[in-house]
Image (cartoon, rainbow, N blue to C red; front, side, top):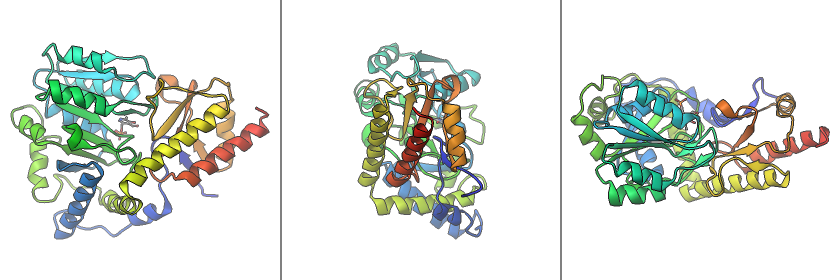
Length: 361
Ligand code: PLP
């Protein structure tokens, strides 16, 4: 058994040995032809995963920083947020602390965004930016991007649309150009299956042009600075080169699996987990039809002793999730993304079954 338990938490997710090995590739200079070649491969690969021609930026920090890249480079009049969990609430907080004119449509945790509310608030004309989280990792709710895209395109084509896809990008099909998403961001420790501390976004021309008209963006997160280095196939600051080698490897793995197969695999793992949980008499936390494909969030209505199960899983070399934020202790989440394949999931669910038997549930 490894010194550290295998992670079955929704981020950081399990990183396979194959990828861990790649992370120790010798370093290369960050202003060399070698890095430009690497960045070119990554940019093409990420564009492919996101079905987009938009520019891809690689950032050597957590995705939280990209929330602020998104808002600082787009908000002039005001930003509308939707909040239905811990991460969407934090993004809204970030906008408040940045002193943007901002408001939120706040939903009970577990509920999804209702498009009629978004339409009503945007129709006031007070907001030039709409910011939302696609997959609320804290509640396991996945919002419907296609439904939202329809009103954004037909009624609000000038509004900049920002999407946090931290726990869905590379695990769920997101057709950025077809949807018309101006800015979509993710970090690498979820469905990308890499360590944390690195993030990725795609940026539309509309957003790049809007950014030019804004001041007070600072330096670090200014899209105009990123653009200058994007043109040279470099990054503005010294990047985390191990992450870049890791990303190249993951993109090869994705290509080998095939995009459609990858999306189907994540859906199948979600169906498997929901089936397993409902057979055990547990209930899904998200509202019906709005559950995530990359993690399953369950209400512990059977009152299993989650702490005891966690201890027993740790003894077997696995770390489980016991809920996030205000849901801690009320729900538990089963991730199925990144380097977790059906066999890994089966192994994990079988282990929980064994433990449930031992505990006589
Ligand atoms: N957004 C969502 C939906 C998340 O799940 C997380 C982290 O779990 C974040 C944002 C923050 O990501 P990071 O820790 O990379 O800043």
